[in-house]
Image (cartoon, rainbow, N blue to C red; front, side, top):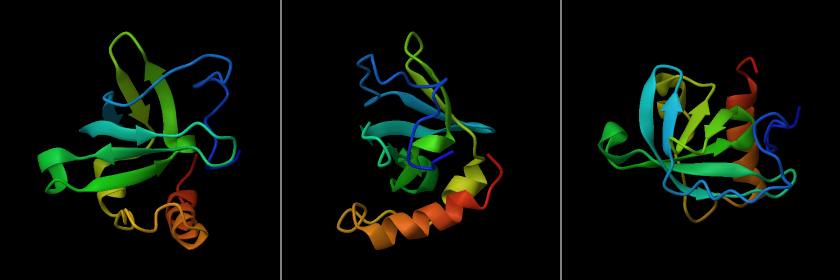
Length: 114
């Protein structure tokens, strides 16, 4: 399964869904809210504003880590712990769309079981 694509059972490309503002739930608790989301095949991700949890930083999560989306509750569930997300490479607003940055993020998240 491609790290930068949503799982087929999580997001149906045939429907429109804006995740901005949804709460993000790690396996062990809430980590923040979706600040930005993309839905392009092979390039999908969410950017999470962590608020005070890690001092107002943002983190980029590949779409593959999203395990479920609840539109009624406006919650996105991800298959990573708070610690795994906190230890990820730091978000860089200037380079997050560059292939080198994506490779670093992919290497980091790709080492965890799906």
